[in-house]
Length: 93
Image (cartoon, rainbow, N blue to C red; front, side):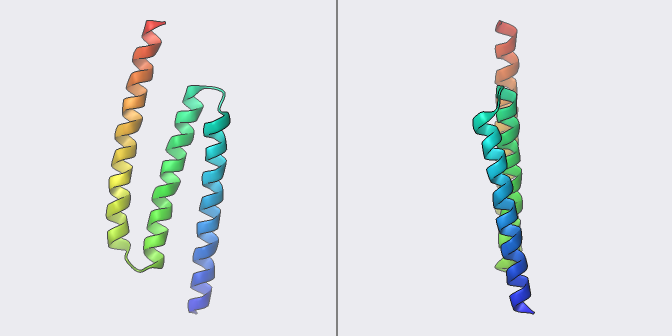
């Protein structure tokens, strides 16, 4: 039974990593700044999920949930700061 769990977690980790790659493409090739910000938010969300899955694999979910919560709060503050900057910049033009 343990081998099936390891294969499942490996499949989930690879899938999430591929999704991060898709969002990275959005960040690099996004036609507008807003597309790039959405791509960064998507990467951050998938990284949070990735942390929780890794915590489940190592049977230390409590520690990894704390780390992912801190990362989510940093993502929220960063997104709000970028949104505020873009809002003020738009008023200038």
